[in-house]
Amino acid sequence: MAFVRTSLILANNFLPLSVALYVLKVMKNFILLLILLSPAITYASTPEETGSITQLLIHRSPTNDQDAGRRFIVKLSSSISNNPCTSGTDSWTGYFSDDTGKAQYSAILAASMAGKEIKIQGTEGFCENNSTLIRNIYTNY
Image (cartoon, rainbow, N blue to C red; front, side):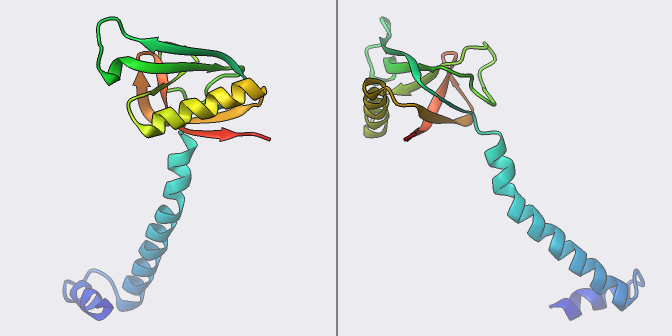
């Protein structure tokens, strides 16, 4: 395959074979570097916060009796890094609409009752009603 690519380059008199092979090697290394760094770049913008629970609110929208109106809101003792919400509120939200949301609420409630710190991670760009949408919860021991 490399022979076909270099012969095409040589047929058009662009570059000598040694230079063409060097360029292909540099391009391969550059693409490999991009692939290796892409998870780190993505993770760098993940909203997260570690701290003790200062507020836990169970909310039901008075105008929406569907599952989307039932949620919980959590505030921790520190600030959210990479907060996607522009309102400046440092709060997190999750929904009771599925098992994951219910498990997240249970973990938060257990940590609150035990007085333990937790770490919450969100998803970049997801802001729900001025609160960052919860993706992961870590308990800190």
